[in-house]
Length: 292
View 1 (cartoon, rainbow, N blue to C red):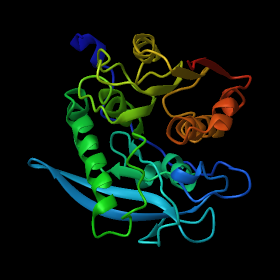
View 2: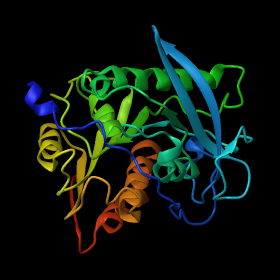
View 3: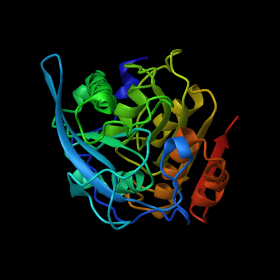
């Protein structure tokens, strides 16, 4: 990998808030061991601080909560009944987990535990892999809650692997977990608006969904396409034709495709897999996939 492949993202790229939840149908299961949930949960959030050496990793952990479906996030809300997989999320440069609730809330409402670090680091820490390693630390800390004296104890599915996702700088961080800072626990990934962070690691075998606008002047579409070409299947690419860096951040087509990708990958939800073309397809999008 050359530095030329990794010199696209400017410091001003930031996530913008979105809204809305994916409708999940009727008849709610209890969690990962009982199959994919079929109705949305309320969302809770708890805050943790973990360390990777001298690097502090402040993390908001969002999770399915008891309460009115669609509500939250509510700080320290009681955890919903069930056992849930982890899908980590990283925000864009200059943003925050709270500014990315349009992506995080639908995941937690759909039955995922979502550790979302708050990074104030420069974009250089994405390029050199530090943010990817910090994201790994957030995953490690969250997994450890399953056996800790914590409300999430016993609610985390530690046997199915982990998902990772993020937008812009967070998309770079996510792709970094597959390349320059590989985390072998990752079995599903969704880099939004990313750039190519390097050659795929042979230690990773993940289902990877790219989401990108083909008129993105911050993170060039061509770089994400290169990253897509280099990865083995299963993989997919959702293109927003005419889409800029921010234009599809809160788009329901991106959100529904993203959530169903994780439902298929981490819950083995084949109905979610079969919905993907309909989730993604419209007169202004292009859906490509190799799912086997």
